[in-house]
Image (cartoon, rainbow, N blue to C red; front, side):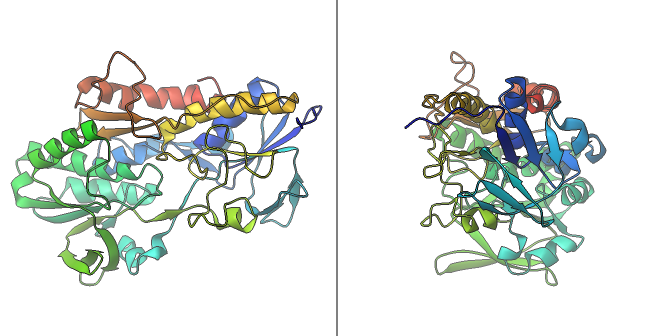
Length: 401
């Protein structure tokens, strides 16, 4: 039976990051209802830029906006945090003790960084040698740590999936290696990359290009390895696969932790009980919940069967907006999300390898006739570093792109 149309429905969006504001802006521009975004943070960060901060090609002070300044016009911002959701009662319970009722709920809560999932990692990040591009303060610390190094061992780690654009862990490595090469000290620095998979990314054309870049920089790659523990005192970390373990000493450790969906998603019954990651259990094509017709999801916390990335959110927001409009009018959602995602690898301080693909790993170039974007190019660096940030701040967050 189709949904009954609701006059001026109460639409609640959980999360005020890229996904939350993108969909809120689209819905507001379409005048689909009374829209509230729940977000506790007072600052908003363009997620790809901390990689450039860590790699020394951007300043932290220029990559942050006040959350109040990026909320789409006409959208209400509730500065609070979700405690749980009662989908049967159509109610969101808040950490503050209050609650918010909804007619339609959109979950765009992102992933959480699980630093404590690896023994010793929080302590290592608190030490001078610990840095990361997945935390703004640690990215700012990474910039001088990598820039000023002239000899020694630097270990870069990439988390296993699921992760929010997990391959972005490689970007500071390439930027640092290019910097060291320009100074003539690259041969005096041992760079090690710890990858959870047997390939750099998983798309053949992209893997060939990244292997070429890694070889050119002389990076030692430990494939199919995950970080098991870190000892900040001795500046060592243990990596392994099965019974095979190796201990690496470091002078600088650039680490990215495992990630997980917010625990309240599974606790609210919005996840598949058999999903160990606790993602919102939606149809990956329509983005509608499989059991609750008035619940939708997009972004990193949604079970969309593709690699999470910021670039995946734009097509998701388009599909969700069309399908929500249809549902509010009593119709059947027909728009489909094909799993498109994009990961730009900044492989030098002026070139990028662009990976665009669908949920089956097939190439999905934005420009259909330009299928060689997976090769290292200067033009894609200009797009990634100059054009896309402007589009993000001025168009995407306002539902205009």
